[in-house]
Image (cartoon, rainbow, N blue to C red; front, side, top):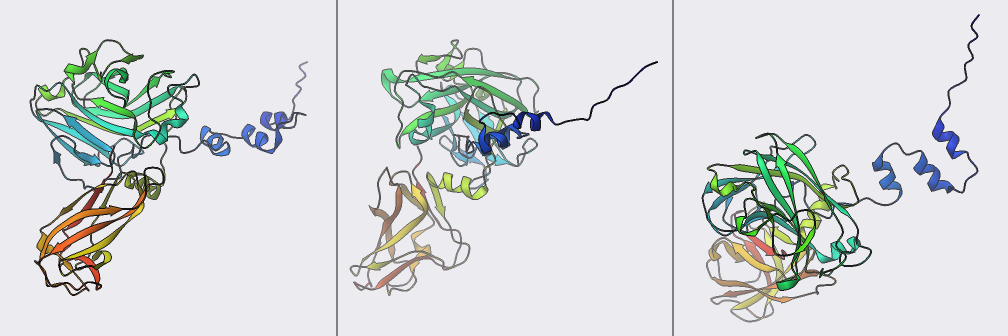
Length: 391
């Protein structure tokens, strides 16, 4: 006859946690963790993505079609090319788990040797990588890509030093099927030498080539002293009529392997972007941009406060005719009298950031020194001020 012996089921994790080992309270929590995300939270390893706005959801400049080099379809992500034409746009076509992507579309051929989408990461943010030291850490780049042309493409990590100190790490990836979202990962082995800025300057650049033929190399997946960011034999999108490329879910993190994309809270991601660019635009007529005072009959100042301190004293520009701005409370003559708006004194520095600055407003006449001054938009919501401290 057959005798069956059964034992009650038990939880192996619980049994291990009961062993007489000095694991401590946190150690027990780690052993009971079910996911990598729980482990990261327990050991304080969140906020892992060094790239800002990798999911392309912040677009302070708008979601229309941008043309020309140095255009931002999403905050921190811009095009750069020397000739030819590309449209650049923030679109809602994205893989599962994402809502937005950036999309370039070829509009005309250009023989320029560089064409790319890029983001530069500030030096303060890359200190944990230890680049240039014996303790440099391996990093992993991951992203989702969708292209209309299958074939070989390049993505590069590059330092920001100039001249003979420029180094790059060029890798290739392949789009296997046209017009289908694909997930790619690239391991970045640690550089233990060369120059890496770890302050408010450019630390590293993430560069997605669109066909930078003059900067191509066959030396892949290793650091080289060169200014290269494309792969020999890669697709040149500028030479293919109407070709498109889309990106989202870009993550640059410390570690040997890619992990799930870090979806930071919207407010936090927006604040990270506003360190580099801030647009102030009214949502109602006659809204005030900033308060200050008049110090002569023809000049006044208005203080502009930023939601977060900016990286450096930002470049300033305004949209709208000068006739669409006016002094709401101070007694200057009516609209149409403004002759200039420029940036003047700035508060802060590159260590603590720039919390605010002054705008100098020049008018034809009519002011009284000592009067309050409120710089406002007159009967429209189309005007805006841009402050740029981009890398």
